[in-house]
Image (cartoon, rainbow, N blue to C red; front, side, top):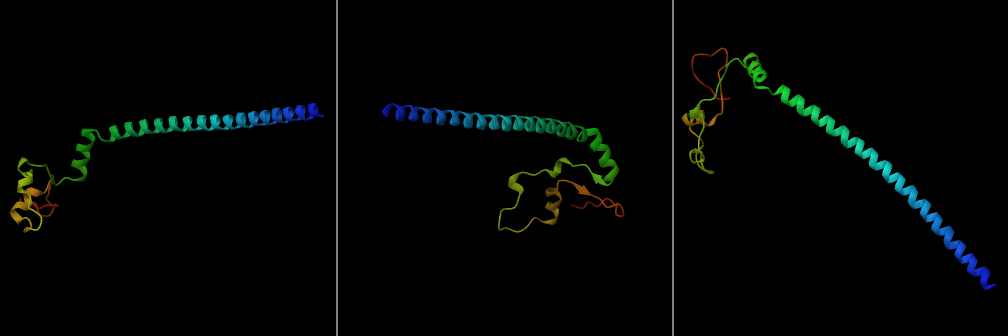
Length: 124
C-alpha cells in the first residue's frame, strides 16, 4: 500500500513538473515573439528617423532657405551687429520698460512694410 502511494506521489510530481515545463516553454515562446516584434518596430522607427533627418537636412540647406527668404520675405532686412546687446543693457525687473530708442536694439530683426519703405525701421 505504501508503495502505491509513493508511486502516485512521484507520478503526480512528475506530471506537475511536466506541466510547469510546458507552461514555461509556452511563456518563453510568447516573450520571444514579442521581443522579435519589438525589435522589428525599433528598426522601422530607426529607419523612419533616418529618413526624417535626411529630409530635415535637405529642407534646411542654406541656399534653399535664402531663396525662400528672398521670395517670401522680400522686405526683411538682415541683422546688424549693433542689434546685439549684453545682459547689462537689459532692464532689471521692476524698472521702467525699454525706451523707444533702445527697443530698436532689443529686436533681432527689422521688418519694413512694403508701403512704407522710407527708411524708417520698425520692429516686428
